[in-house]
Length: 194
Figure (cartoon, rainbow, N blue to C red):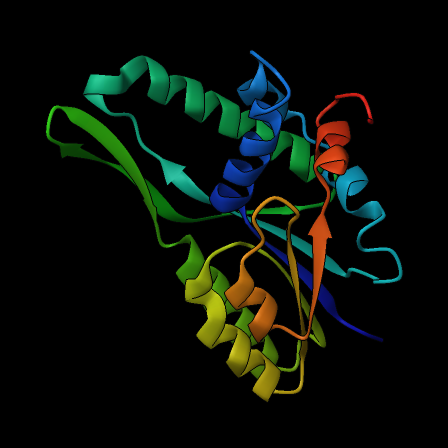
């Protein structure tokens, strides 16, 4: 039996989906992210692949005094997303943190640690022969060394990217590339198919 595992870099994925949705809607983009139907989104692009495990990696959100209201909204959205994805059969793994940093007069939030956890999981599963195929949904080029190591251990690696601005480095490093269409993303978020 083939072990095919889907690894989703959650923060990266949500940012890319938000870019697509922002081009189609004036408001409600954040709310739609919590309701995304990933099974629907991945059904056609991953047709023919029997995915045995689906893992969505997210960073732990922390409340920040200068952005208390925004922090609470994001934490609430993450809970909603988690519950939605668990109902769809996804594992929701908290890996890393989103931390606030003061840059001049602004507070900037940076996610750290998710890509490291994905890399460690991919390589350790490949070493333990717990997978034959990796489907990597991320646009983070930092994952290229892990991809090379997984391939060295005779596992296939598929890059699942976005038609708007695919990562050329990941497409080059992986065995094959599948791109999600904007229309598929919009439909999976409750929008109308064009």
